[in-house]
Every structure is written in C-alpha cells, then in structure tokens.
Amino acid sequence: MKDKQNNYAFIDSQNLNLGVRSQGWVLDFARFRVLLKDMYGVEKAFIFIGYVTGNEALYTELQTTGFICIFKPTLEIKEKGTTRVKGNVDAELVLHAMIEYPNYEKAVIVSGDGDFHCLIEYLEANNKLLKVIVPNKRYSSLLRRFAGFIVSVQLFREKLLKNKKASLLDLP
Image (tube, rainbow, N blue to C red; front, side, top):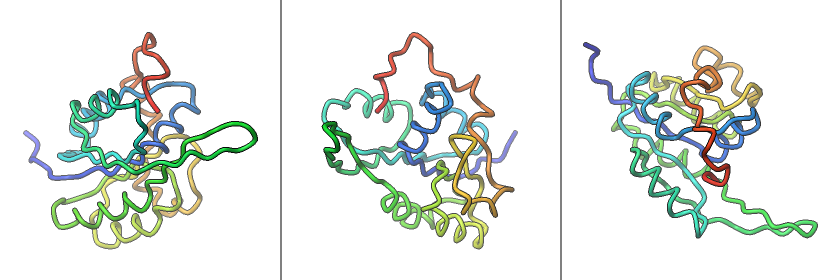
C-alpha cells in the first residue's frame, strides 16, 4: 500500500482547457481529478478560473468532482466587432501556491505558461515541486530547464477524453 501523500495541484484552467482543445479533444475534468489523486497523491486541487455568469453548472460540476474553485473576475474586451472574455489567473495561482505552501508536501502545477517560471523555480529549489503538467506539445521555453518535472497531459489523452457526446459548450 502506498503511503498517503499530501500533495496539492494548482491548475490554470484556461491554459489547460485551450491547450487540450488545440490538440483536438475535450478534457473530462472528473477523470482528471481522479488521475491527479491516483498518480500524484493530490489531496487538494485548486483550479483557477475566470467567473462568467451563466457557467454556474460548470463551477458546480468542478466542485462536485473535487476541485476547489478560485474565481477571478473577468473583463469583456471588444476588438474588431467581437467580444472576448478575459480572466488572467496567474497572480491568483502563484499567491495561493504560496499561501498553501506550509500545508503540502509537493506541488503539481498544471500550465505551460512561462509566467509561472518564478514559482516553479522556487518550488524546485525548496524540494516542493512534484510535476509540471503541460496541456500541449508546445509550452514556454522558460520551462525547459525543468524538463525532468514536465509531463504532457497528452500522455493521458485516452484516459481523460470527455465523452464525445458531450457538448463543446460544457467548458469555458
């Protein structure tokens, strides 16, 4: 029997969702939560996500499957006749990783964004980094020096593939 681990995951939901979709598939978040617990001993999984009115069912589903949702207010940006929603969660993810720092043994960072370089560097230097899960084949070159910690979510595609009957509108 494996010793119980007390690892935490810090997930950039936008980076994960867009990265996976750019590879042509949709992530089953419930299965992803199970994978984090089973493979990496993740007891708490914080998912950082922009709050958009109308997506409450998604947020409830994430919480029901074991994620702790940290919401970021979003902005509507109008460009060239289209409106896009922006909710950058980088600062919140770094802040929560440091607030929770004394409470976990190791951290799993889920993002391929180079903005997390300083956090990943600090965690590694203090023997608190377990893995960096990147959502797609291409990730920031700033993270290359942590290659020994990096694993691509694509390796788990078959396990994490959302039911093909699910709507693509299910996720932000």
